[in-house]
Image 1: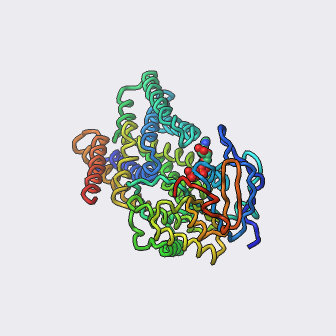
Image 2 (image 1 turned 45 degrees about the horizontal axis):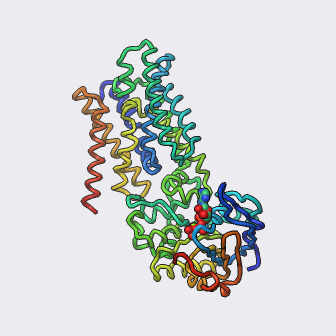
Length: 231
Length: 263
Ligand SMILES: Nc1ncnc2c1ncn2[C@@H]1O[C@H](COP(=O)(O)OP(=O)(O)OP(=O)(O)O)[C@@H](O)[C@H]1O
Ligand SMILES: [Mg+2]
C-alpha cells in the first residue's frame, strides 16, 4: 500500500471571485480509503472536480500515477438530474457505462457483468424498474453500480450516503469496503458523517477555509471537526 | 394505389423518414431538444427557399442551412441559459429569410406550400435515391457512436465523468439531426417535421424502459403515422401532414392516459 495513485502538490484553486483551495498537498496511495470532511462550501466538491479534470488548478499540480488514462475513475456525484419521468430501467442505466465503439446492444459477457454488479448492489430484483420511480437510496445504489461497472481503480463518493437510512448506508459502504480490500480499489469518500468516516476510512483530509489537515482516521474526532452544519 | 409511381416513391421515402425520425427522436427527447428541432425545421424552410431561389433542389438548400446552423448551435454551448432566446431569434430570422427568398424566386406558390406543408406528389425517384443515401449515412453514424450517444443523452453527468468527448458528440448529433430534419421535411413539410422527431419518442418513453425498446416503439409509432397518413391522404386528397399530425398526437395523448391509469 505504498504505491502512489494520485499526488496533489501545492494545489490551489480559485473561482473568479473566490479562493477555494490553498496550497494543498496530499499523496493518495493505491488501495487507500480516504475520507474528506469539512463544512458546507469549503471546497470538497471543487476538489473532486479538479481530480476529475473538469476544472484546472489555478496553481500547483495534480498528477495521476502513471497517468490519467491508466487510472479509470468512478464518480458518484452529489447531484444528478434524474426526474420522476426518467424512463430507463435500473439495469439499462447501469449498462450505459459500457460506452465504447461496438455493437449497439450489450454482448452476453457485458450483460453478465451488469447482472453481477446489480446482484452485488442488491438491485437485481428491481432491475426492471424505471430509475425515475426508484427511491433515493435505490438511485444512489444504481449510481454506485454504474460507476463500478467498468472496474475503476479510483472511486469517488461525494456525499453519496447522505440521503440513505442507516441500514442502506452500511450496506453500501460495506460493499465499497469489500471491493476496496479485495481489489485494492482506492476510495475517496466525501461525507459529513464523522462516525461513518471513522468506521470505514483509513485516512482523513479535513478541509477548513484556506487550510487543511490530514492524518490517520483515528485522530479524527468530533471535537476536532467541531459543530458540523449538517449530518 | 401503389401502382402509381409517385405513391411508390412516397411510401419508400415515408418509410425511411419514419425510421430515421423514430431513432433520432429518442435522443432528441432524452437531450431535451424538441425546441431546437423545431427551430432547425424553420431554418430548413429558409434553406429550401434559398435553394429554389438559387435554382437548386430544395433539399440541398435545406441541408446547407441546417448543417451550418447545427454546428453554430453546438458552438453556442449545450447548457447556456442564453441558448433558448438565441434560438428564438434565429428562428425569426430563418422564417423571414425563407419568405424573402421565396418572393425573390420566380416560382409559383405551390412550391412554397410544398416546402412548408410537405407533399406526396413532389417526390421523384432521384429524390428517393438521395434520401436513401442520406438516411443510410445517418443510420451508420448512429450505429457506430450508439453507445456513446446513449450514455451522453441519458446520463450526461455520468458521461462527463467518464471523460466522453461530450462536446464533439453533441455537434455530431446536431449534424445528424440536421440531415434527419432535411430528409423528413420532404414529405411532412418543414412546419410539421418536429412532430415526427418528437411525439413518437415522447410517447415511447411511457411504454418502454430500455433505449433499444424505446427506439422500436418510436419507430413503430412513426411508421404507423406515415403509412396510414399517406393512405388517408391518397383517399381523401387532404394533406398528408394533417393526418400524420393527428395520428401522432393521438399516440402521444394515449400514452399519457396509459401512464395515468397505471400510476
Ligand atoms: N461554478 C462556481 N462558480 C463560482 N463559485 C463556485 C462555483 N462552484 C462552487 N463555488 C463556490 O466554491 C465554494 C466551494 O464549493 P463546493 O461545492 O466545493 O463546496 P463543498 O465543500 O462541496 O460543500 P457542500 O458540503 O455543501 O457540498 C463555495 O463557496 C461555492 O459557493
Ligand atoms: Mg459538495
